[in-house]
View 1 (cartoon, rainbow, N blue to C red):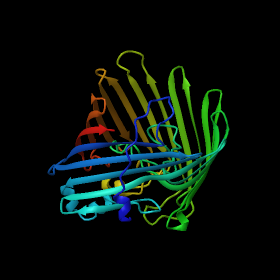
View 2: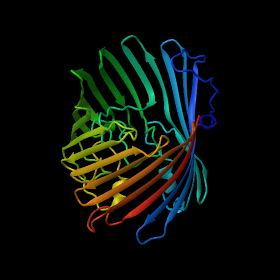
View 3: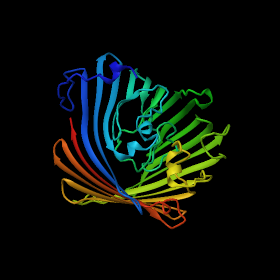
View 4: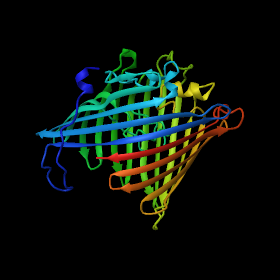
Length: 386
């Protein structure tokens, strides 16, 4: 990465009043977060990490029909894990076609990393839109697992990266009417066999949002569909994708054709507590075999590797303890008897200050993937937004 990119700092922008024309073509936002993580593996010493995470998001709208966006995250990590071979390289890795990340500090237990995870230009016509660079392509209609999210899949347990990664891509979109459009995306790879491209048709029929998509994701040909609607006050969403490998991936176990299906529903109860209940089910007809949780976490994450078992279930319950504090409890069950339990407590300290506490427990039966190496993770995060 060029040195000037790491030294790039945003220009201050004037505050905007919602609903009024911006006084400046620039908009700058971001945050500063400090987080401590304590990992307690069963039968092994606890590990502690301290992370200072700062982010800039800059938007420029000074040219007619054009918009330019840049998002930069800077992280300073203090961790005993950095002494492990390859751990620092993993933190500073850039999975995109262009390497827009760099480690600018590397010591025994201290590492500084900067990454440009958004860098794109958008041209907006009356019905056409053209976007190129590094940006997020969010085709998911469900909220827990997204078999239709071919370009930017993410782990449901990674709560600290709410922006999610972007893709290096070119996208052409055409509006067809109310809630209806066509998107065509091409995302290159260093290996021509791994170029990805897909066409999506998004539509609405009698209150049902739907989409059809087809294309190529890495080494797989893909076809999929999804829908989202409301039935008697409950949100109902589903996605299904069919992956057909064109050749074997040397980084993965032997792959076969596979259906990946996600179905979920949530319901918000009226009342002062804003109670929300959510249930989700994931089915993978041909999950990739894996020998350990560590091996699974090292696999390249994609829409076909959302889980390591055929069936996975998820449940979530959240409610407001007060006007400023919200508690969310969640659990996942994998059909090899692996279990996940999670709890998060979010408290607003002031308009721009937020305190978050998270507990994650990975466990299960003795022969299950999580049961082989159970662990509890504790997180405490303080965030200032601007």
